[in-house]
Length: 199
Image (cartoon, rainbow, N blue to C red; front, side, top):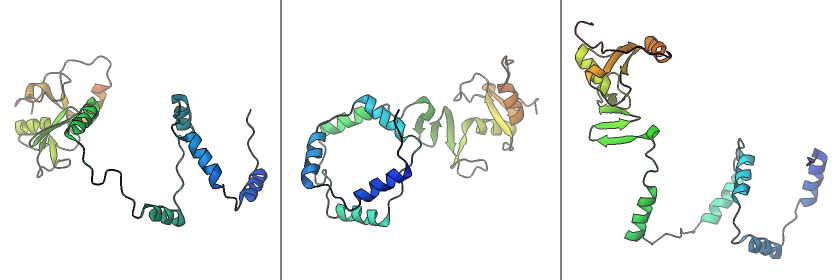
């Protein structure tokens, strides 16, 4: 078992190392041994696990000054250089499909966008807007009712398809009722309640 150092032992080590500078030769030797060396997957995994939940301490003012001084006059390796058409194509192909997971699905059609399975319409003047947009299903129901949806009312898609905003596939719920319905193991079949006789 690995023994942890006591506070006294740590203080003694820090006192002995005060003012100690590693010579240039040893620095070169260390750098030469590490050049071209690749870490194993196991080593990388262990490093990641050891850093979990740990936060990097904030930089001191002196440290920040040193960083700014070291970067003064430093130019990036790509300054004045351009990617060729071939390399651009390779880069675009490598990025394809990275951000198209079902949780972050996002398709745009002018004023209509698809986000997380729902269609959202650009309506900046709507009272129930979210970032200037409203769900298409809400607008369909509001048109049938002839009024805006009240707080606590929510729209349920009967067939479970979020972008199927046909009136016969929509059911108007109060949020508490909807939560109760979603919690049922055996859900009863619903028929749209968006008819003139229902209200």
